[in-house]
Every structure is written in structure tokens, then in C-alpha cells.
Length: 275
Image (cartoon, one colour):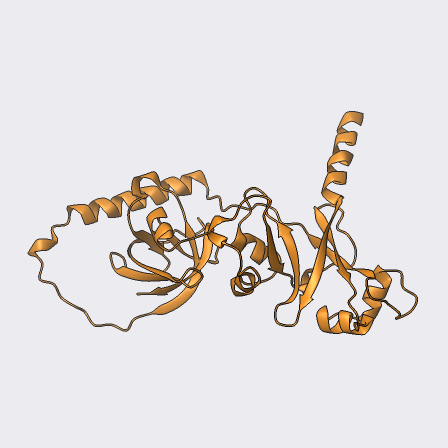
């Protein structure tokens, strides 16, 4: 029992230990930090974690080759001050966020303009008795949860059902003799939408341009565009997206071939769809 208690206390200490980010401010990008990529973390996941968007991340890292990111590489991530807490979390890994005062800056401008917070909050965090601060002073501006790895993992049964659905649709399409059909173009209004794509490796179909979509017509083509990489591909919708197999924010599941054609950098990324 004593050993267990010591172990629990040790784990809690590890979770609660401080890391530190040194925040910077840019009038165009806002507040941002430098983050060292850990194994398994993705550009999209980090962007979401810190409350930013891909456009801001791309602008901050325009000099980097984002197609070849490596472990321990530093990237710039915009930070949403609304994620700050005034006290360090005790049960999750967290990081201190600090800011170095620049010439001409005041406690008010840093608090209200950069952080959109009350001046008294920053004063309490730093045990300040007055508004006086000086260039090169380091201010603690809050605490944030450190990013973790949260891959999408569907239940194994659901994965099996998904693969069965793909196989059934694939066999149906393969066996269908289309040569005897007269080609007809059915006019209809095209639907355009933007959503989150997720690519999943299914060995049987790794080389095929197929997708699962929530509402697009089955056995119909869909045009996908990745604005991040400026790449486009046409694929075939072979089945609807199974309910409860993926988070609600996933709009489309694509095969590895489609992901490769779109230059996907992460398992999850924004795509524009036309069908």
C-alpha cells in the first residue's frame, strides 16, 4: 500500500511538473509560442490544441518545409489566450507561459491588448504591488495544458465492419459491367463544402482513390482540394461514413492513395469537397 501511494505521488509529480513556453507577440499573428515537436504529434493536432487555425500556423512557419517535419524540430504556433488558467493544473501535464517585456510596453497593453485579460490577473500571477514594469522583465501570463497524442481509434468491431463495407462496395463496382450501359449525364447542382478529412490505412485499398462521406452519393465522383498544399484529386464515394466510428467533426475518410495525392501532412487535415 505504501509503495502504491509513493508511485501515485511520483506519477502526479511528473504530470504536474512545469514546462515553460516563452510567448511572443506579433501585430499580424498575435500571441505565439515555439513548440518542439514530440514523437507522434502532428501539425494539425498541435494547431487545434493551442486554439489556433492552419492558416495562422502556415503563416508563422512559411520558411519551414512542412512536408518534412521531424521530431524535436521547433515550430511556431499561435496561442489562444482564452486557454490560459491562472493556477497550474494539478492532475494534468501543464506548462507555464511567460512573456518578456519589450521597450515601450506597459502592463495594461500586455494585459488588455495582447491577452484580453484584466490587469489585476497578471498582477496577481506575478505578485506585483504596482503597475510598474520594465523592459526585459519576465512576466508569467498563465498556464496551459501540454499537448498529448490523441489518435483516432475506432472500436475494432467497427473497423471490421468498415472494411467489410469497403470490400462489398469494391466487389460490386469491380463486377459491374458498365460497357453495356449508355452514358448519361444527370444534371444536378454541385455541392461544395469544407470539412475535416481523416485518412486510414486499409491494406486492401491502399492504392485506390476511394472515400467514405457522410452525405455524398454512393458510387459518384468527388473532387477534393487541399488548400494547404494546393493539390487536388478526384476519388469515388464507396460508402457512407459509419456513425460513431469517428468523431463528429470528421466529414470524410480517405484512402492512403487519396491522402498521398493531396500531399497530406497529418492524419487529419482540412479539405474542400465538390460533388
